[in-house]
Length: 184
Ligand code: XMP
Ligand code: MG
Image 1: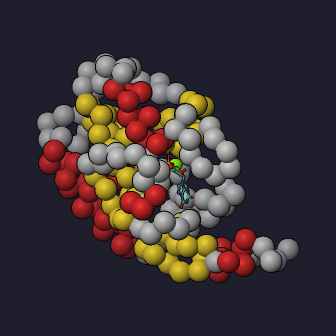
Image 2: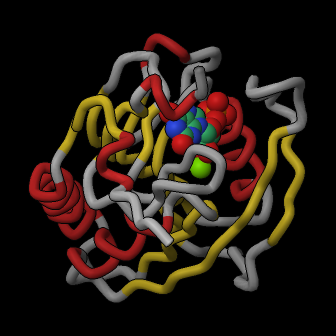
């Protein structure tokens, strides 16, 4: 069996592992300062946010708890519709909790704006958002992301939790997929 190096499928690396970790350290320092003296509930959005969650959680010095949700957007093709279905719900009661949603990427913003409203409706004391990547040109709805990492162009990116057909999540950096992967 021939093994292939998934890094060969990258057209270009947008952010290296080091750049990502530096950015997460920056975000973590702000979060530590903003929530000093509190216990924060981190809510990771499966599956893309697993790497961000793992690194952010360990960069924080605050006491934290972690919980996870899986959601899927109804809609045609690859377009997010804003109608969201919960595939896996939280185990935690949010009443009175300070919640930070941890996401890999905000594209149209429809998923996160729905998710924030949903968590707020459960009686959380506050719900803020941390997202490593954001595509401002793809925004369909304005989402207030208190802790935003990098702004990227409107192109499909993979790595560091982000997938194409469930692959490439284990790349350490983030990059754009090479055209040869799409076929032809
Ligand atoms: P919204 O609702 O903001 O959707 O349009 C955000 C979700 O869409 C996925 N997404 C991507 N996944 N590379 C990926 O691997 C991308 O470039 C990309 N853009 C959007 C992702 O699941 C995110 O949570
Ligand atoms: Mg995601």
